[in-house]
Length: 387
Image (cartoon, rainbow, N blue to C red; front, top):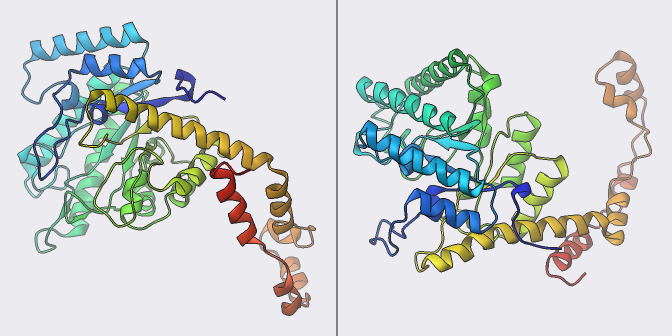
């Protein structure tokens, strides 16, 4: 099997990922800045499907209208030349000092109004370039001290902003869905709506919940010590997995954004197996950064590493599904003679009467074999190439 990326795999990267210059809170950039056109051409060389962007990844925040038009024209030409597409776009509502207290949840109503204006203009840019998913990451939507904001007020402000933007998109007739991206902390001490579960609850309070889903990210759930695959499954079960951010992250650390599958491959295996088994058809977006030590040749290796690891794990998942011993164990573990199928129809007086008449032998139930140790070891051996 070839592990080379092809457009049909729907692998995407952001301008901010491959364009990251290696700057961190403790050090200056280690790589020169490349233009969006150069980054598009770099990604095309690696066989990826698309490129995503924040508004200011493409157009500087202080660009004049003429500069904006020239940049977009050049970018569109690069897309046409390479065949790359733009499936997703987003707005930077966190870098500029004006957003020091948040954007949609800032205490200053003028900042909240500016955030709406900036987002509307960025939506126009995304739609112009073909995006059908629009991501919201509330990087500054939070607090360092809860003396500063009432979380109920902040929830209302965030809700009002999304309702306004949903109504705007509907009024324009755009084919665009919103995807909210949860994160527990960093750069704020506490970010509102920190996990997939909290976001799912919030979406139900919106005026147009059908337009709004999720963009879960590996690193963000791992920062909180949570099982990312379980969060993705919850989003999928709710019909809200609109987009996904793939990277890697050790539990409980700062936002590391490592190359996909590079530090927690077992978790990555289960994630890939889940996405492929349920038939997820959206972009596989890599929101990760090359090491600060990398030059741009090594950044290309980073791109290839993300996509190759995904495809290797996809192949491993297929082998898992075909492995006779693994499947035999799963059949034994999941054996069901259908004796309790009557419970699958839900409550009825007849079901309760039948259930109450049942004599359960707890000792016999406990003796049922559950060889999870063997199953897990076989999974490890398969991943390590020993099967």
